[in-house]
Amino acid sequence: MKNTLLTRLLNTTRLVPLLVGALAFAGASTSQAAVITWSTLVVDSTDTAGAGSGLGDLAVSTNGTLIEAVNYGTQTDVTVNGVTFDGVSIDNAESPANYSNSFDEDAPNSITGTSTGGIIDTLTSTFSRTTSAATTGTLTGLTFGRDYEVQLIASFATIGRTTTFNDGNGNTLATSTNNPHAFAVGIFTADATGTQTLNFPISTGSSFLNAYQLRDVTPVPEPSSLALLFLFSSSFLFTARRRR
Image 1 (cartoon, one colour):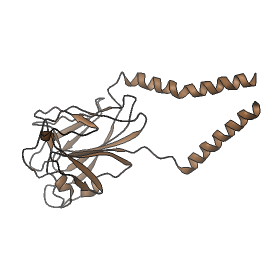
Image 2 (cartoon, helix red, strand yellow; image 1 turned 60 degrees about the vertical axis):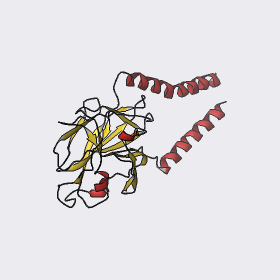
Image 3 (cartoon, one colour; image 1 turned 180 degrees about the horizontal axis):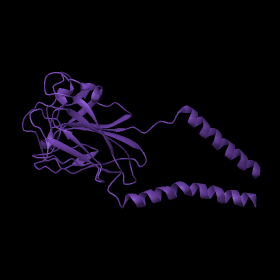
Image 4 (cartoon, helix red, strand yellow; image 1 turned 90 degrees about the vertical axis):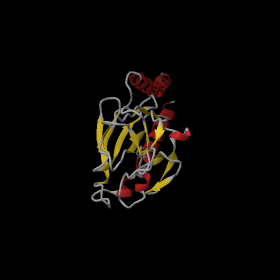
């Protein structure tokens, strides 16, 4: 009798993750994506020489593990704060691995983005764009339940526009293309679709990005937590065997 009850309990325990995953997938299929929590990180607070109160190169995140970093509008790689942004040229039929969007051309000329005196000035001297103000995009290749950080910058010193980043669920962040120049920073937990809506229409003219990066920032369990989990599992198995 005890063995029968124990078997039922174990079978039920094994089904719980499957049921949770199925429910999450069903819920995800009715929505566009997970919720993104937005914030800004100022790179360059002015258009004059120097970063002012901005962070300069240090605004480039090194949190967690890098998945992809892209330097738009060129085939040249640029390394800022230890992060290498791979050059991606739309004009040469190139595209990021994890971010599909509606860009259709590179900037016709090099521009002045930031003026910090750091390497990030090179990163913001090129961009890719659409020929319209509306830009749709999707992050792909995500793992259900993991936490991600995305950084995006649209910086152009001589053009004052507003770029509005949004997750398709009504959560938005508006950043200026100058004064200040800032990264849009988004944090989210991937849902069962494995994708994330990420649009960024601009107030006027063509939507563009100088650079973007995607990082996995899922917390790593502390050794003490892993030890407790091991002890609990061992105790459960020992008790189950004794009851047999």
